[in-house]
Length: 77
Image 1 (cartoon, rainbow, N blue to C red):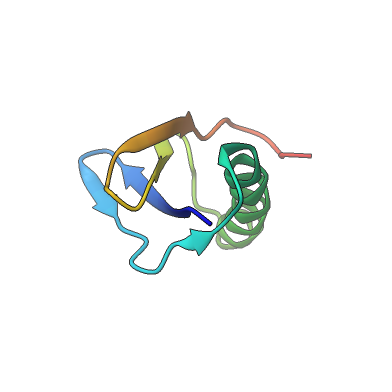
Image 2: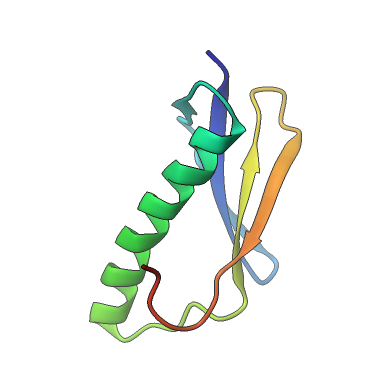
């Protein structure tokens, strides 16, 4: 099963995901991203932090970028 890593980019700063997650395919990685973003939005919203300008970079085990998704303002459902 492929391993995907969910790094967060905040401007020029990259917050790496050192562990990654084994998932069957890229669609599953996108689903995992949605779950993670919901958690991040809930935590950051609680602390009053803004997510505008941040993005998630999903890479494979070789470090290749497979999906790049910007955070959008507002709740994610």
